[in-house]
Length: 297
Ligand code: ATP
Figure 1 (tube, rainbow, N blue to C red):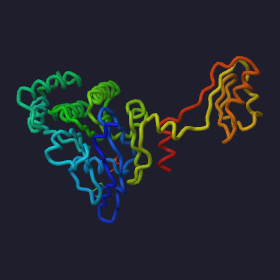
Figure 2: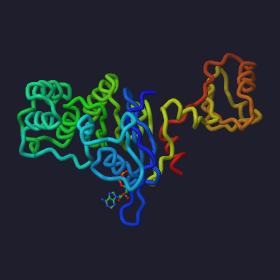
Figure 3: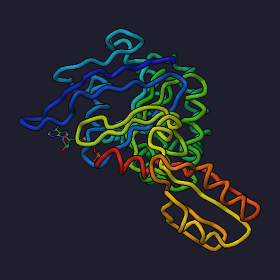
Figure 4: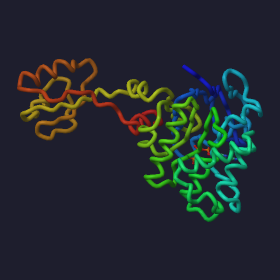
């Protein structure tokens, strides 16, 4: 695995309150990592520590095996929760300026700004002051600002909040492109359905503690339910009397059921086949929302 960013045993308190407790996770290059947790779970605090905006009390953040220095932070892109573009500056000036601050040459910064605004469907507003933009468009401008210097690590705090469904799709496609070209992307979100669609990897935090972390596929396997879906040609009511089966849904020929530990799924399949054709017999994978509920309890 191409681990780019490593957050290790990070603790942080505000006054008496310990808001991060031994937080550890990794973010790999070329992958999209979703950072999920309820309000106040500690996402923003963690992201600020990664970006060096806030110090950890203990613990480390390393990038490619070494502590993150100021020079390396130049290669990070950050979209903070509090946003913070200059309201009076035009969108294009602002993004070019931020590109220059990150060491991009003037001509290059202008070229990249034009391309990014096109890609984020904001080209028509390039010469408007930021304050004249709708909140959703200001958000697209923020995303462009985080991307203009082609960062190797991209940290985005709630990049989708406040975007309409079309803008969500655009931003989603842009983040996928970045990840595909090798960038390590970490973004926080409350929108579990979106995270589920978008992410390769997930980090779930609750009350300042990492509750689960890993690839989406691995997490789904870890938290697999003993649940199956059966579709047959005749009424599946016989499942009620099948040993080890707890029927959850029955809609004529379609049923969803849980199996007791140790019960044999193949025995149920054979019982179904003995009654006629079986159209579907599949394990039901948990949704991210279900995994989330289970791990944050
Ligand atoms: P949200 O989704 O609401 O943004 P979050 O997961 O990003 O939540 P944080 O903003 O990291 O959570 O906050 C974690 C906890 O730390 C919260 O209880 C918050 O009130 C507290 N906190 C954050 N910043 C400070 C601060 N500067 N001073 C005191 N407490 C703080």
